[in-house]
View 1 (cartoon, rainbow, N blue to C red):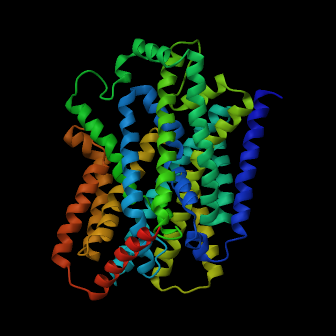
View 2 (cartoon, rainbow, N blue to C red; view 1 turned 90 degrees about the vertical axis):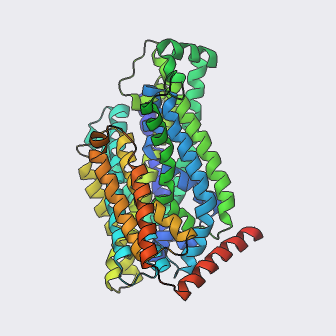
View 3 (spheres, helix red, strand yellow; view 1 turned 135 degrees about the vertical axis):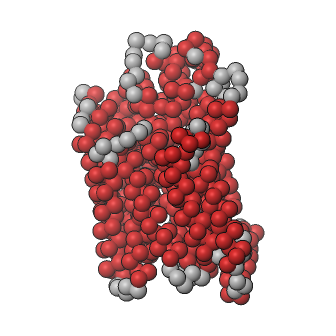
Length: 502
């Protein structure tokens, strides 16, 4: 068999497994709630791995190694910030959100939770949340389509658009039929594939270079600053801003709907402990592998006759050079897994935002079968719009993901935290903070660097603005509500009791 035949065989096997899982999930999905949240019966291991795989996306396999290859270890602070943020998210948010969403009228989406938690009779909070989900997820899914197109262009020398459409088509197929359960189970398989690829590629590359010592020597000869966590010998103001921006990626975790929806789907609040341990273990190994791949790539492509065109292709290029074609096929499939796991999860959350938080909120009543169909139609529509946006991508994969990540982190993150840990948050405070946070991300992304002369990550001003506005407005609009107080106390006690019993 030719090398290309091995690649195609591996990808066909991967696609077949994804579709088979989608069919398996389809047979176990009978109503709208099952399609959106798997009946709140997701095991801790599935929640952990699916949250990690859907969270990391194509930037883990392409964006982060590419950034490390270009700038060195200073970009690793993103990985540090993400690990800290993910740990705190699992530890603080997961058990209480699982408890509170059930107490708050069995909420199955983040916007519905906000409305039920804050007793918002105006419905504006839920509608605004649903719109934010649809807007930012359309951008997010579009960034993954870009990654898919870039992948196929490198792997098979196909046109960018052709590759993008293949990724969109297969992901759409198993997401349409499998729903949340299908997306979660495919995420588990995809998470394992991503971890395998990110461990085997840098290890084999190190052996080919003669070990860690040889690799470090070559990197120092190329540019000693690549091995510095501060990008050089001295710490400048620009470097400090860069470090703070990198660490601030961790703030985004508190507001990512496709991640925190896994908390809502857990069997019970106590499951969050085991899920946290599994998820953070997977995350540390995967991020370490991505950083190592970028660094080893610097040494390899500067110490051999091989050349690297696009830094974001470093993992793919190393695997093509060093591994058997069949293994290369599975590494390539792992890159696709990173992309497709995120797309599937985001399509499901986008669908739930439309059906649960925009369509039904205006008083529409319909059967579970009709809602199920409408949810699938929404998945299709969002995928089509995201694909159209990806036809002419602007920026790198990391830049595209960074914008959507900041949008969710700044608009939803503070409201999630305040909803779970502050009794006096009001619906008007949450709405004002959310809108200001989202608007700040858009404005800072467009004008911040020009006005302030610093490339501070937009999630930081957006997050701060949200918190300040939400607290100030809540102070002025708070009115004591006995039912809200009772629900808050019940949610806290339930989460604590379940955790103690585990």
